[in-house]
Image (cartoon, rainbow, N blue to C red; front, side, top):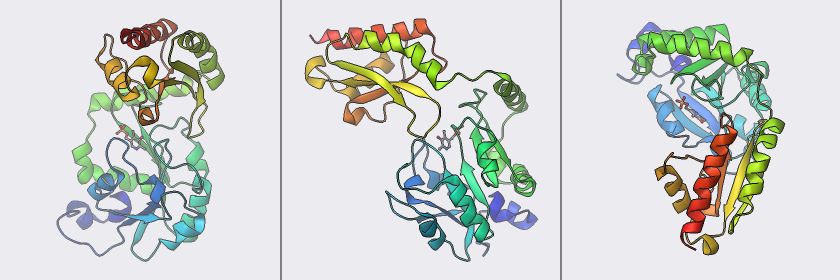
Length: 291
Ligand SMILES: *Cc1c(COP(=O)(O)O)cnc(C)c1O
């Protein structure tokens, strides 16, 4: 909405009332048009924009991104996320070059990212973080970027942004979470590996279970425990394992995106060693029950 309204008071108030005949196309690599829990297209529509996909499901070069730009383009959107296709897609810095060459803003959705400066330094005009992911604050969002664009975002508090209003207690909570986040020593990937190694060794003693370290597919310094299940040996599918873990006491939510391929991932950030023991016991009980 900020990059379509661009401070115009009439468009701010009449965003969805009628067509405005100003640029409203938001160009993004096709492999970034994902469902992160809600579809990117719906979110863009909410702000008065229309998604235009560049490239193909499995590739998008700088030239392919540029080819999707026309006089109706309002911004380029880059989604930095494990949800996206990673291979053969241009980098944020390359997307920033394309944006600059066309006089367009680059918006980076960095919802789950950990570095609050990286993408801005790489040339993004607006960088969006979830307040409740890496920052570990309350449900909220944080937008960093070039002053003019940030001002236009703030103005949306009197437009479509009102529907996403964060309360004063949420703002205080987020501010505190950001202060803590910036001050706190970050748990390194290597420390995560050290924490999960005994967990992995115990899991590997269970019949039909194979565990190993898996590094973050989006390139962050995060290690997770990848667990593969042998459906024959454990007598259930991995999708069933995911559901049963969620229904247990305590409820265990894992990364189940690859359950269809027989794998799950356990994200060990903020998980203590006694909690890893509980996860191990829950999995041990499940895989032994049908034997
Ligand atoms: C999680 C996520 C969001 C939304 O963040 P919330 O704080 O949950 O609203 C947006 N984009 C991507 C890529 C995400 O992963």
